Length: 200
Image (cartoon, rainbow, N blue to C red; front, side):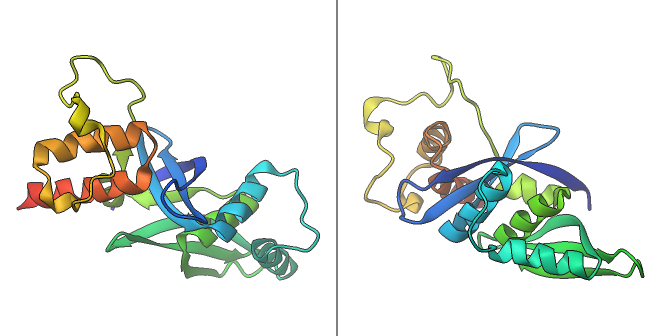
């Protein structure tokens, strides 16, 4: 299977849930974006590593892991987001001992794997089929004659019904709005429902 390299685009706080964040990963060549829901602690650890200016009074878990690895000549060569099951991403980091050159793959939560990838300055990858299933294309501008242009009653994203009650056409309209409003949790749910309808 083909690997696709990803870059960290942003971390955004969820509008609908407290202490929930969305990590946005862009493919390095292309326009697709992979949104991954993560917790507050992981979001903070990733943000601190990305910023590089804040030094916590005590080491964070991911900093401790890197110190431990460095002490025993272990490095991380790459992180691979390898599986998507029921909306949950699974990842692994590929380690190598600098002296013996022994290589080991270790499964991890995606948020932890990304936090370590930043600290080890190693690349992050996923498989093409995962990006095809879960990736979204962000289009910042919507033309007036857009195929999915909305009327006023379609403009509301927080409908009381579940997504399964909407028509396919309306789901597509709602997906465009969710992406433009950077509501990636909602966009993921809508995208999954559209995919399910198209497969049936």
